[in-house]
Image (cartoon, rainbow, N blue to C red):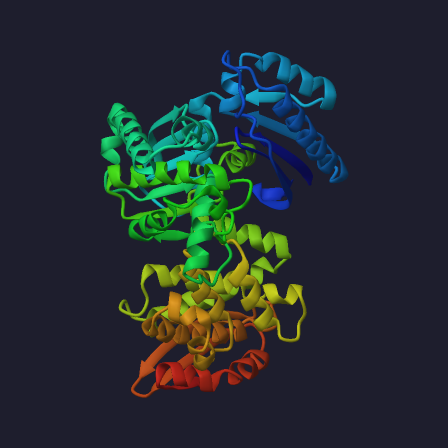
Length: 500
């Protein structure tokens, strides 16, 4: 196993992303560090990076290189975007970095930047068609995706820093400045001919400004999950937040929970741009992607095939987590196999939608992750881990349902949980109750983790559910394990469970 360091030199912030590359294209995040440099600010009239900003960038790179060295990183891939892309002293900057740290920086073109954004987002969020938008410090990328394939893309030299400097950095009527900025944005959007074809599509937001918006939203609505990846907001909720903030002074922004001091002065400019595209495309929702350029670089490294697209995002993510926690893959696949057989006769089409199949598969694959903490109370540990993990391919609601499915079902626990009111319905609780019962029977069928059960058949006869087992050895361990969950099963399905 080797370690890879990915350095992203953006116009606003710089980051290093360190990952351990494992077998079968899997990876584990080791560390990540950010430094707000504002490399795209204070550029001279002839587009030179300022010496002050270069010194700050060199200090950041010094820290990044030290972190890579301490983690025994075997390869560093460094990329730079708009600020370095347009800098007239680009060559001098690149040579200085090379001479000081031995790092070769690849300056991405606008198209390459958009493509890496696309790879990062589309390989980690289960969305077929969407408009991807990455608003950085000095540029914004738009990528239109249909059926998970990139259709059009463009990089515009317009970002949170440049918009703020152009429209919001001087005194005067706030309404006038906002009106001028909105006109500029709409004229820009109209000049992108294909953008009109994105009308009605959800927007997948990439970059710090989108994440900041999600943090403000999360604090405003007491959202119970910290994970921002695949975080979803309605357009109305975003506009409501904007209306609350647009007339405030910058000093007041710093007091808003979710807005960092480093981003407070440029957040309004980014927010106006986001609102403008929402209205222009008549989008009803925004999905946040924490994955962007860095993860796009990673996927290019992991996946040698073309196109560089993960076909089954959830399966890839689950197997990556299995690898991370050193779970018994043969066992979890056996549990999933048993769950599939049990669910077909027990969960009809009304109860068992496609999304519930994803939820149950996740619960089957990750039910033992709590053993990483300790055997005693492992189900509760598994719940806590699954609640907070990043599981690509699931919505946050689906993830919470999968976590509750792993628990030995306790309806009152869900009802009394803060997750119940804000995320899952009473119908979801009934579904979780049934899936939890099925999972625990399936776990019991491979209690010894030796694939002793070769096959099962399930018959529903009146008030009885008859489970017939075919096994290599006498299934006494399996039957004893199922007995522990008989009451839970019978409560969920309203029928007796008989094992033959």
